[in-house]
Image (cartoon, rainbow, N blue to C red; front, side):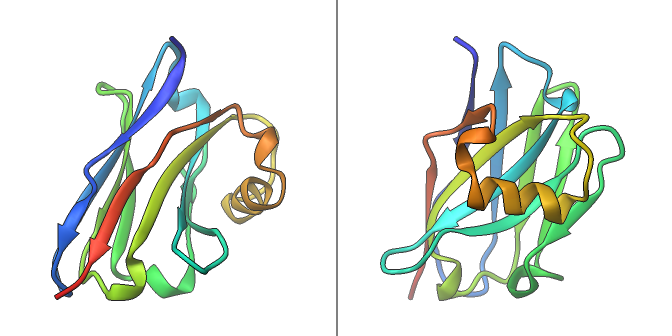
Length: 134
């Protein structure tokens, strides 16, 4: 079945780290832009980070800059989100979404599409839960 699957979520204390994975099945993830989105109870969905097809341009929301790193592993057909210095505000359900490349625009534009028009993404995962708490 063609899909993306998230993994790597869990519970950590503030200041801890987690590494999320988004693995593609049935298609080559390098040909797609990939974004990480998160939802927390009572809050609007946020576009956390994205990496573009082709040039691997990246974008991060301000609240995670310097703490999160998005990267690709072409061999494993996976995009990672390394999350360091985690805060309670990072708690939420994290989803990855893939959009076939070649549509143009920046990584920031891509993430805005994922937020504003989620139906244009080719694939969404089912999410992985992150809890940052003492």
